[in-house]
Length: 118
Image 1 (cartoon, rainbow, N blue to C red):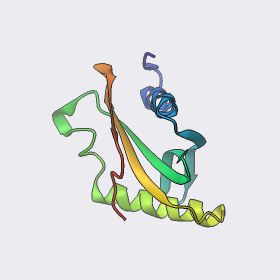
Image 2: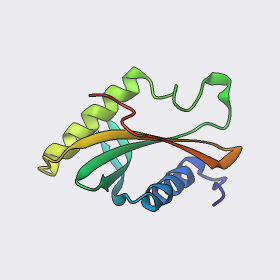
Image 3: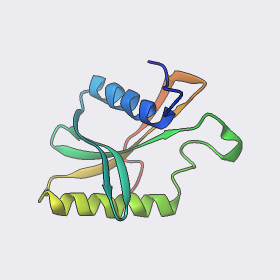
Image 4: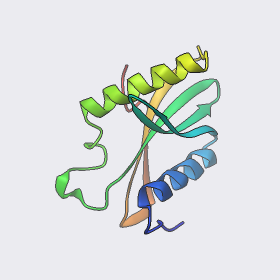
């Protein structure tokens, strides 16, 4: 899959969803927005609900894709996930994963399970 030049972030999220589905996860929701922020993908891995942050870095001059998930971004993700859980009355186990990729080589997708410790 090639990145969409008009919206590379959206294309990266679609690619990440496809990749994770190939790993056995099932898509629940995309781009959940609330006042705290956004979660790119929400998926099930068995009985575990997985909140996925997708990061695309075509230029590492400002740091790696993983480094771009700052402590402030992590707190926004956690608050957003808490609100999602409350709104949907979900009490299943949860985790935060990250899917990292670069524009230069999309075959090199890196999947970090438990990328954020809560």
